[in-house]
Length: 339
Image (cartoon, rainbow, N blue to C red):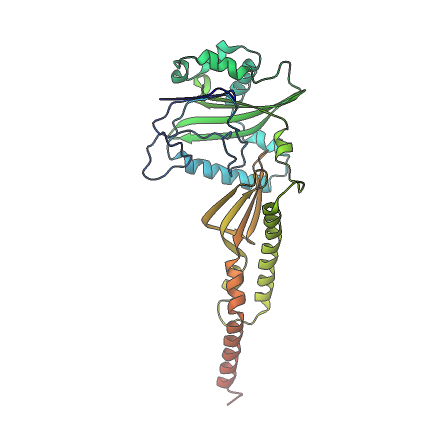
C-alpha cells in the first residue's frame, strides 16, 4: 500500500501497488503487478494521450498484468490503421472505440462529482479505495476542481479498452468546457455489466481545450521543432530520389531488392510536437523514413528514420554500374555473333 499527497498544488494520489518503481512498461524481471499508467500521465507520452500535470487531484488503484502491454500496443496499431483509412470524422471514429456501458458509468460518475454528489461515486469505488482513510475528503477535493455551473459542452476525448486474462479494464477521458476554462475528467474502471467499479479518478483544469493545446502550429516553436520539420520533408524526398535513381540505374542482379531498400528508413526517432519530447526506438522501420500520427485529440507525433537503404545504394551505385557493364561485356563476348 502506498499513499502520497502534495498539499500546495492540490494534488492527492492514492495507489495500491506491489511495485514501487512506477515503470509504465513491462520488463522481464519485474513483478506481475505494477503501477497503472493511464492516458493522463505526469509526462506527455508517445501514445498521443493527454498529459496530467502533477497538480491535479486523483485517486487510483494499480494492478495491471504484463500481458496488457502487448494488448495495448496491438489496439494502438489498429487505431492507427483506422485513422488512416476511415473516411469519417475524428469524433465519429472515437465513438466506434467507446465501450458500453462503461462510458455511461464514467460520464455519470464524473457528473455526480461535478455536482458534489459524492455518495454514489464512493459506492462504485473498488473495495480497496472504499476502505482508504479519508476517501470522502479526497472525493470532495476532486469535486472542487470542477467550476460552478453547468458545462457548455462535454465530449469524449480518449478511450482505451484492455482485456487482460479475461479481466476488462476501461480508461475513458472526458473534456468539459466551462465559461472560464476546460476540465479533463478521467475514469479508470474494471469489470463488466453491473459489476463495473471505479479504480481511478483524475481531474485536471486547463486554460485551453486539448484540440487547441495539441494543434499543429509553427508559432513560438524552437530549433528542435524546425529541424524535425525539415528532416520530415528532406528524408522522404531523399528516399524517393534514390528510388527513382535506382530504377534508372543498370544493376546486374537483384535490382528489385535494391529499389525496395531505398524506400525504408531504419530506427525511429519520435518527436512530440506539443511538448517537444523525444523518444527513440532502435528496432523499427518506416516507409519513406518519416511518419506523422495523431491519436484522436492527442499531440502530433512525428517519426524520423535513417534512410539507410538509400544511403547504401548511393554509396554502392558506381560499383553496381561497373558490375552491370562488366556483365554486359562478358555476355557480349560470349555471344555467337561476337565469335
